[in-house]
Structures are given as structure tokens and as C-alpha cells.
Image (cartoon, rainbow, N blue to C red; front, side):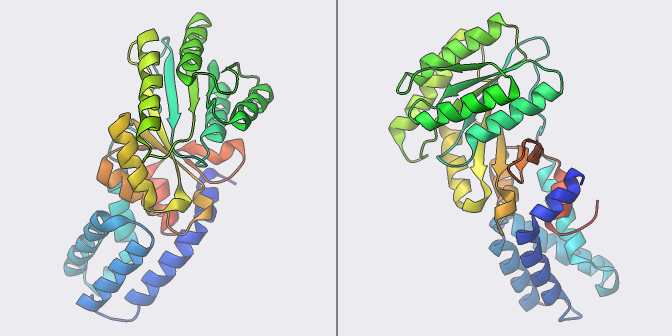
Length: 305
């Protein structure tokens, strides 16, 4: 099964509810009335597309209806096109500094899948023939260090780790130094999960990034916020606060197969202008894939490629 087919299947919870509701509304009336437009708005908001994107889709719908009329008008196609346009903005590719080391910091709240994402990304980079290392900078959760050690052995990827309770900034510093000495292409930093509302923990994250920056200019070069899609629009609040503390360069959306509110991907990028770089739709290493706007936009509305 290709990734688009898998994506379409795994977005089934969002797709089934959303598409069913859209078809019910548009098939009931030969005209796009104020009432049907309002119902369509509710359907999109229920899938967590956010008010801005929803308003944009409804406006495009009205324009298309006025231009083409009911006979040639397809709401789902118009909506997918609008979502695709919104998601295409920004650079969705992972930064590659060529012969120089690229440091990638994974940040986010507890339970979003940062450690697993770190390992999956290492697997993908290694499969491309790139040398990669990982760093266990979540020193507050012993299980996180052990989990990354297991992945390190399974993937045969070097791991920099300290003891439980060690200073995460010191571990990050050592990891960058090790990657530089080995002339690695990438160093992936697994940071501790922290609530975006805890000021002291966000300060600590800033320290980790500052220390890396002193060891290697501009490190981390990528700061990826890992978001759990099942949290819906609460993820938008997380993104806002993390972006204030450590400027984000991209988003990784995990657990898209477990939510009926996958529209939050569109809402977050549309508001914060932070590109989605990877999406996760399952537990296997290959279930984390680079984000492609067209594929996502069409899969969420049940359309073919």
C-alpha cells in the first residue's frame, strides 16, 4: 500500500464524518442558501479547521457557486483546493546543511510521541545514507532514556545519553560535540515533555537551545514541535506558547489515525504560518512521512490523487 492510500485510510475518522455531513447538506438543496452555508461552516469547525480556514473555504464556495452554478459545482473539490493552497505555504522539507551538521530539536508536551518520532526520523535519514545521531535529553523520565536506547540499538544509531536527573543542557552540548567530531549529517535531540503553561520548564528548554548554540552557531537549526492530533484545537495553544519560547521551524503531527479532528493541521499552519514537515499515521517506522500538502488535502476529503 502506497503512503497516500494509507493516509487516506488512516484519516478515515475525520473523512467519514466530514464528507458524510457535507454530502448531506449540499444534496438537500439546489441552491447554496444562508442556512446551508452555515451548516457547512459548522461541519468544518467540528473537524477543527478553525474559523479562519472555514471562512476562507465558505467564501471560495460562494464564489465558485456564483461562477459555475449548481450543475458544475463540487463543494468537496473546492474545499480540498482551498486547503491545499493554504498548506502549500512555507518550506515543508527538513533542513539539510550538506556537509555541515544539522541539529534538530524535538519539543512538545508530554505524550505526543517525541521519542518515537525522533527514532522514526533517524530511521528515515539513515535509509537515505546519511549519518545520524540521537541524544536523550529527557533526563526527567528514565523510561525515555531507556526507550531511546532500545531504538538506538535497533537502528544501529549512536546515542548520547546522561544519567537520570542529569542536566539536559549538558547532554545536548555533549551530543553536538560528538556529532561534530564524527562529522555526522544530523543530530536529533529528544527533549523532555513539558506543559506549555509551565514558565520554569520553558526557560529550561531555552537554556538547552542556548547551550547548543554556543557549541555550534545557530544550533538547533530545526526546532520541530511534535503535536498529538487527538488533542484537536488544544494543539493550537501549545503551538502558540512553544513558538514564543523557542521559535519553531516546523510541526510534526502524530496520531492522525486516531482523530476525527484532523482539520487542526490546517488551522495551526494557517494561523501561525509554521509549516508541517512530517505526519504520523501509525506505529511503524514508515508511518512517519514527509508532509505533502496535496496528498493531505485530498485524503482528508476522501478524494483520489
